[in-house]
Image (cartoon, rainbow, N blue to C red; front, side, top):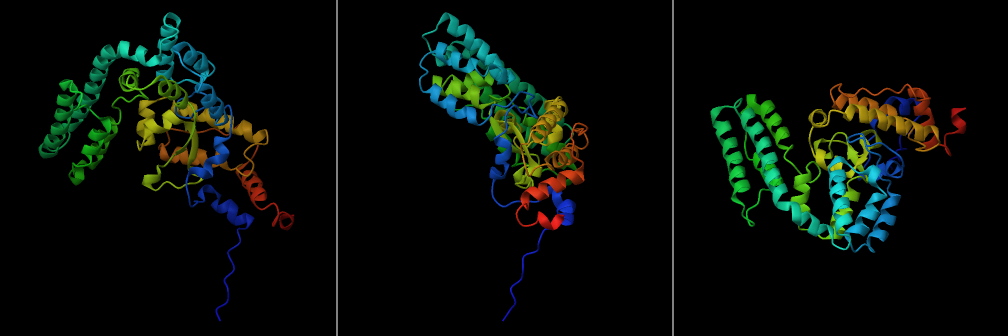
Length: 349
């Protein structure tokens, strides 16, 4: 009869050696400790993230909102948390509500939609122009295939047809149909990253107005709020092999997470150059939480994130842990004791 194999016990020495990135089965539920935090700076956008427990109160209050004035009143409680695009829209809504307190936000967007649509088309053309400029570095055959895609997009943008509208995602997906030559893969990757800069409701006030002019007041109000709520972000995207573990998680605002999509962190920094500064503020906030007794069992988190961000950003994000009271070994020991406080605590001493 085969002898039952005992599971390998994780000793403190092993924990210290392999603590960096222990993968977990499952989903981002492993990031729950982060989602419970308050007063945390978004590492991508620099705003203070709206904590998860505020969502229930917001949804309850939103049920009673009927007019533009009431929407503005509710959103004003979260004004300091709003992102750039959402802040611009909030200012428009404030002005509209002061003149039309009993009207609704959808009518406000409908009033300015035509002008915003024109500006949105120009924003889209600017990105497509940049894509075409980069296509000059490709072979004639590959460049022609790419130009066919961008030309079709321009025709759709100019058509003004309600049934045939330009969809950013369709264009991005169409680029996957082009198979570049081996020596063109690097520049084609740059082209796909440039295409990710096509305006969305996260990055452009004009795109927001065009999209949400078709939505009701409740959806519009919720959208401004939701953009700043907490979301678990994979530093290395899951589709690229990123693991579901604390060592690969950041707490970001929902909008910052969505807008990055699968963009490389290097290119995301090009889009938002202050990300390295925001990441430092994020870690400083996390350190303050840990020093106050929060995030127990995750004392190694600042070290994990420092190393992962430096690696994935190719050295563009260099976090300082000078404010942290734990050395790497002390942090690993604290995390280990928390995880094994019942079985192994006495054995360590």
